Amino acid sequence: MDPASAFQQHCATDRGGDTLYLPNWSAEDWRRLFGHTESVSVSSGDVLIRHGERERALYFVISGALEVTGRTSSSDTLGRLFREQPGSVIGEIALFDGLPRTATVWATETTVLLRLDYEQLQGFIAEFPMLGNGLLFALGRVLAFRLRRSSERDLHNH
Image (cartoon, rainbow, N blue to C red; front, side, top):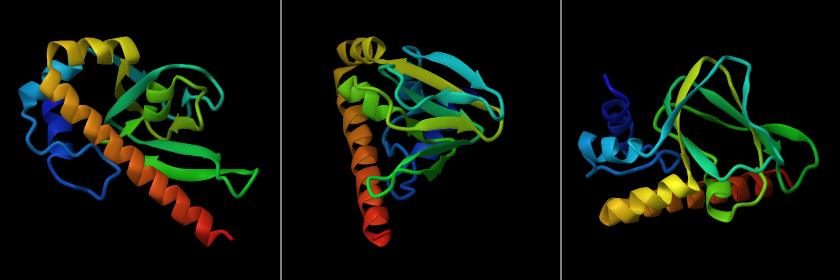
């Protein structure tokens, strides 16, 4: 199965906000988006994103699994924040704000991703404005979900 069809299957069902939810996107819509990306493979144990580095890009998880570690606002210690699986996106905060990475992400198994940087996103939006609008709202939904989850975790840790 090609990456577009595989990703579409993960994003057609609402799995609680941590994955992109674009139920109306066809495999062809995903192919249009993924035509603006580049493929990246990360071996088990390797770091994909390092806290504090600058990179204005996000990644679509096609296969494999990643673990995200970072600091919560209530603690100075590093801890596991969450695990990402196919259908997820990571790196969206730095894509939007252009600031240093807020977490470290490493592969817990061999993982295939598609990387979309800021310029590639702008090209996609210019070429497919309606799809771009849908993608931006889906990314906003993921950000909102993760912010709520982080806030709830901080409340429970007090």
